[in-house]
Length: 142
Image (cartoon, rainbow, N blue to C red; front, side, top):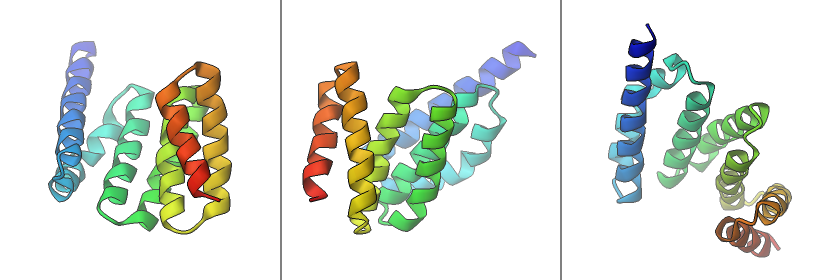
């Protein structure tokens, strides 16, 4: 049973990385179609963080496809789940995507609050690139 579980998780990871590659190479619509085909696999995987990463990816894809309103729900759920699993670093990364989506929708106050929290988390962890990204979001929220 463990071997089957490990194989299932490996397949989800491989598909996840393929979707991410497609999205980052500009094939967002194709990535979204593939994601829709494997969406249920994230929930079936036994590792609790796999579902959160699936939601995060879904939010990123929707945002990249210009469906910013629809991206808010999966990004928010992913962030909440990661915080519940005490994965504050990854939750902060999701917060950057969520803050960016909020900014696209003109929700500057919420964007500013999230970006500020993310900035403090990244500075505390000495992660400069993401701290700088949060700082840019803060500047753009003014």
